[in-house]
Length: 461
Image (spheres, rainbow, N blue to C red):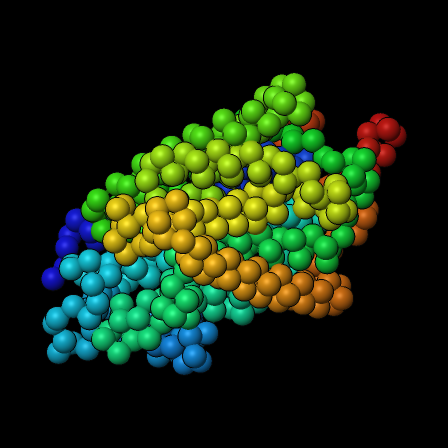
């Protein structure tokens, strides 16, 4: 039967995960130049609009509909959310069926639409994460087109592989191959979200190329308090991301909540210690980045490891992510805001370390890792899942980005990049440096002048 408490928890968790996208916008927005901050905020915000519509029309059906292609993709029976109103997840969809179809996520059922909205927020933030890799140089509508195509052919199928469990939406419902055949563990999205987004970010950074002047001019963060505010909002929202993935207000939710807290705290310490050893000083930017790295790493493991295991994962992730952000200089790819170093590396760390720290004493639905007598079997499964998702996302993201760029719709001109992408793409500026009021005004209401033209006029006056 329907459990009101579980339903309330899942809906609140969905709202918390929704908050993560504007939180991410502030986190990224503080790290870019002052003349690029609005573009970065908009690149995140537009994901809510685009993915929200596509998820309703066909995305949920592709991800969670009955499997149609050998564990690779759901069918379109649930397109437009057909047949979901008034139905329960965890029970057979047919109105005549009253017995639970599967034990997961528990003996009680959820309204299907509560689950739809919870999973929507995962689908929204995943492409938003990618945006940090191409900050300062992407056309807004080119990015919007990329998001629409990418979620359709990359995220929705991968979500089916990882999140769609047999029987969840009905006794005959068949899910994805990673969840049900390979049985790799991913509690809340280490593969489907973070490895997926990190690989796509790497691909786009290569396709769009370096920013003007990089690496000599790396673009200093224009507002570090924004970065810390964004990281704090992400940490807060991440409780919905991880603890909400229990899909019930139960002991596993409490474990995931606890592990999210302690792993993130440990990751902050791990990152700052690396900074102290390398540069002699801990930084605010490092603390914020370390927190996000810890959140990323604990995501796949949150419901499968003990709190001590979570601390170990956090420390390792914080230190390795801090070291990994330097890889872009070694290999020459301009990952503007370290999506690869934080999300790809952090996602890999958390996914793989389940194979060491996983324990059935925490969650009977999990597996014992190497340190709990489970051998190397689960580690192999985790590695295979991570490798396949990484490769699939990288290749398709590269192709999508390359086609859009070749069509002239992705990279801004050098003049717009140097002059200010906010003004060029949105006819606005985030800050008024002249004391004349807010932004540049709506383009249909007030004539918009370039910064150069305005400077010439001021000189003549």
